[in-house]
Length: 342
Image (cartoon, rainbow, N blue to C red):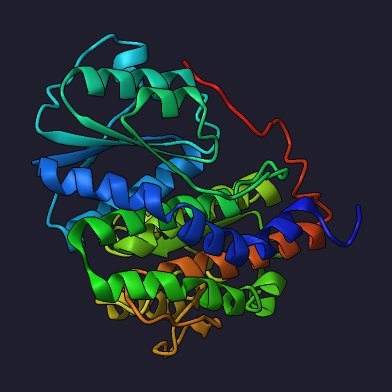
């Protein structure tokens, strides 16, 4: 294995890919946002799988926090397997897929359009079946992604969705924060969490916690632990983990809490500290911790952009952890780059 994997290089391409999206992709974002503003949908649905579905989870929180519009995630099998049509008139439907090829996502999006939803595709392939099925397409301009584990396509999908909401609402402060993101992402790559890598080098299970928009990032992080390091990671909201899941936390059990600089930070930190007091090996991306171990982070100028720097730091960390465990993150076991489900 070389010192520089495809995943390593692509993580470091994230800031430039984001700049490209915000320049070359801006017109498509503004056109879709203008149409959505005129349509005044009553609610939004999303259709996605895998990392793209984690981008959709982030979009849900961002929409509900900025526009006050509820967002529902639709299982693609509703259309592709069960042949059911949903009542989606007076709504918007966002399909997210880096390849735009999965038949079930395409079919569900087509069904949404037939039922009256205004459809938008967020994809890295602007001529894909998903793009052709939607009224609007937002190309994420990530460039070729050779690593099986999505990194720059995930980040640019999230940024595309957030920019769509910012222009839809015409939120100047959020638009400015998004335009500043590439520089913050450059800084975020430097945080690769060596103390956490040492703690996890020989571990096979952990919890990843988040809340609000950062919960989407904990979902993505848990997937990447499985995908690149063969570590069984489970993602929980910090509001849920102290119910049933906490019963498996024994002394030395690892916990990673992804806290952003938003209204949820104190609640995530309090849970991480509580678990640390109970003997867990807890780490948190916050300076507010009293018992858990703090991890470095890059603060941005807006609460909704902070989670993006967290996931970029996580990517830098997980790529190194995989190599330190003797695993090539470019060749995850039993996986391929594009998975097409029906």
